[in-house]
Image (tube, rainbow, N blue to C red; front, top):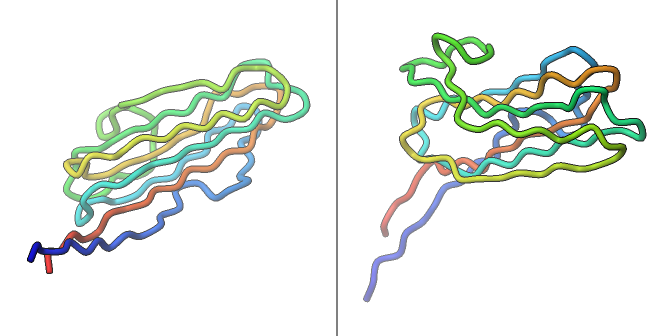
Length: 134
């Protein structure tokens, strides 16, 4: 008889659905993964009926810290591992997702750089918190 593996998964909200990132602002959300075993990250950005003059840019950042650092752009603590833009067209929806490796200690998503128009954004993580063989 083979062993079964049970998984414990937890939904984490980094940026709530429908969050507005106003022109010239930055919206950030982060999650401490010290006791997690990775997960799957999804991100969504939607331009309005009038697209921004400069596109919204989504950055995914990680920190190699034993405790989660304050939310911030790339620098001493946070390092960018992925960056994508949603363009300036009217109404496009950009959706991205990728696995988060178990070795990552802290993760942050930031939406920034859009000008003239607000965009809506969200970021969620399906966090794997436990894998147990029974």
